Image (tube, rainbow, N blue to C red; front, side):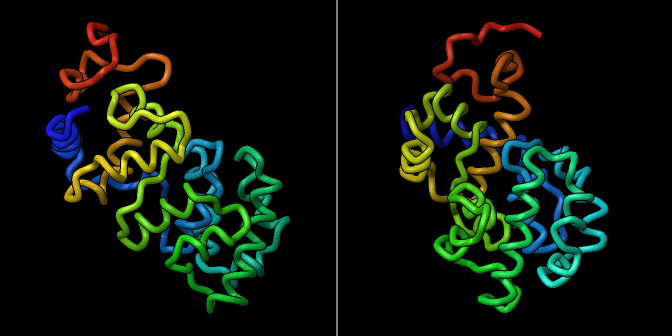
Length: 212
């Protein structure tokens, strides 16, 4: 995709969602971190249902450790892989208390050192909590980047690197959210809704004549 087309692409997405945000519900930086860890291989809607009562009760690492692994499991048992996720959340909460004064660290290296936190999760937290221009490449971003021709790549890392190179600086902070929301609501995996897509004219996908 040509540089001008990339700018047009993000301008169109920004026009539809001027202030893009994560669809995960959270109270503060800590609950954001927990929500993102829980969202691995799960839907945001499913995580939100599970954390509604949890975050009313628990909003910091000390409260999470006091709740304990079994207590946490009772809240999140509807989420896939809840056993391992509960173990990771309790462990990362203990580390935050022991090594970070109970605060969420602001560097990727420190975040990725926490149990259950990979590069994608770290990028989401850095972007949403601390306003850093990071790009978390999930399945939606990976699909949109490849399908549209925006930033083709065979691996998550390749797509992230390419996106960081091609996305205009003034759109970089929101790019992660725009791409996720576009993939979730329009550029869907099985049936992309090209008939109502705002960037269909510059997209490389060959099924642009689909009808509603």
